[in-house]
Amino acid sequence: MSKAFTKESDADLDDDLPEDTGGLPAGAKNYMTPEGFARMREELMTLMRKERPEVVQVVSWAAANGDRSENGDYLYGKKRLREIDRRIRFLSKRLERSEVVDPAKRPKTDQVFFGATVTWANSKGEERIVKIVGIDEVDPAKGHVSWISPIAKALMRAHEGDMVKMRTPGGVEEIEIVKVAYV
Image (cartoon, rainbow, N blue to C red; front, side, top):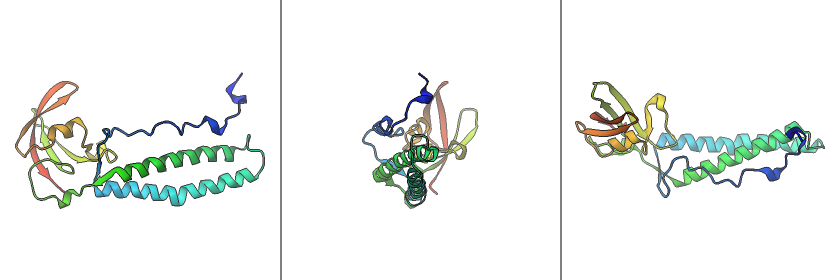
């Protein structure tokens, strides 16, 4: 029998699946910069105050139209509502577990910690700049890397001028820390 003729029920939900920790080590705090925390909190507030009420309104309107089994607005709305609720739960848990670390308030140091913007050079003299941020703030295009990434682990606790070894897919590479800044 074709799947097209089977009824999709609310019992087929995947809401009982475990929430993805998104790469956060078990029991670890979710370190975040103030900007990352504000961005996640804004997304949560938008979902709760704007998107969810709009979808609930559409679903209740669609439910009032009668037959729900072939009502696209109702079926799509219920699915979208589950997605929004799942994202709200994820964001709430993440923000609850988060610890905001403001790099600008860190005492002046040339040692690499969370929130540092690090300029490093490889053996070919090519310089790269990365900022060590929380796992929810990663953006390779901006040079933002997670504090649990291999590059961040290699750089952590090192000082300007230090040579550190970083594991890469091509083997171990030695890099030099050129500059450390907290902005």
